[in-house]
Image (cartoon, rainbow, N blue to C red; front, side, top):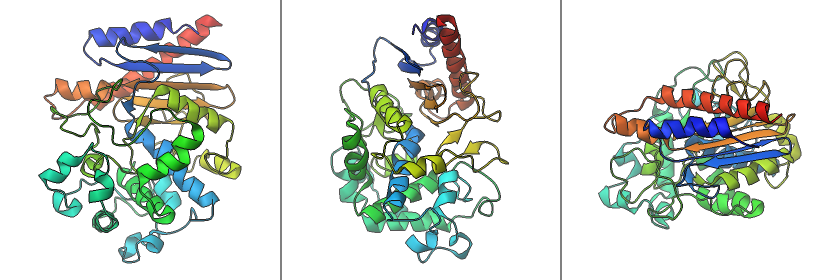
Length: 366
């Protein structure tokens, strides 16, 4: 597969100052294509941001459900007995589908218990386990659960980073270990992932610069919540390569029980929010006419996820098609606005443009 149109588009965006690093990996049936900027390749690490919600957190929750360690209809009251009344009946299924009503809130330093010294520890081995103890995690969960709901559970949909933060804590509770250790044990090692990790140290060779701050400090992660949790959290921000994401996708396409039991694939890849803003499975973003960022490349029934750093991956089982897009476009938008905010709509439009360029390349090849 020759991704000529896609490469022309992305190289032009580099010339325009919209990004400086990208990798695109595409499979269509038995045909494969790979393009990248000169400073990157298939084994370059990118902060995948919220793609970690499915690649790590939802995967661990579905695995734990298959092992009988939890149930998808378990309520928050089971894991947080002092949960406020209006949140006691929120289920793990609602958290997975972003229909819980829990909204994203930033974490005050006094809740995390992080002083300046602690924050500097981010990016150094062991900082999460040493400083973000089970007691701190429970304090963070109580703070999140003390905030007002955006709506009554299951009556609407709002994308919720803090819902996945709680799911990460719950995975840690049922497995009895930290999220980064669970990732290594249950995802990285079984799938044979080569480089992907949490809390990538500054200066790691062959890694993209994707954070949103004027100075990185010792922590390379972009998301502000994960930054305060020393680089490890259920709402995303692990670092992956295109090759490692492809390994995950191939296991998924094979219904591999290395990820979770066969019956949970059908449960996960179902649209639980047909009447809301966009389609959501158990973690997955479901593609249909409501979703524009996959352009015309992925038909209804496809699924995947995006990351706020300018990344995404989507899959269609019937076509044997998947596309991995890794960029640092969001960082460049922040830079263009003096690191104060970004024009994320332009990043979303970029995804649509890339997917449509891929389709032109695939159509030309055929």
